[in-house]
Image 1: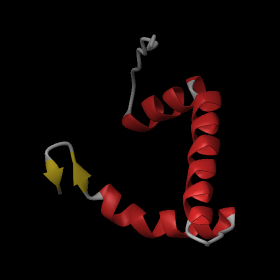
Image 2: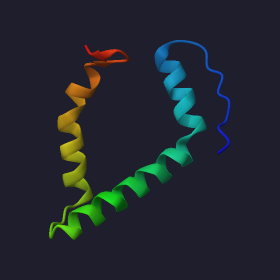
Image 3: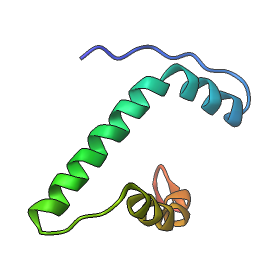
Length: 74
């Protein structure tokens, strides 16, 4: 697998925006793949969900995710 080299500079926000702009298509593709896998997993267990329901669950996990540090929990 070839991984592209990425050079970023500026504030964390500017770097995040530049990274997001460069990899927008890949991020959308990954999102679609993960959503398909989640739906298959749920359907195998007799469950269904909408995209909005999945996003609501993901939002609930954001505070915990934001508290993470590279060395463990913040």
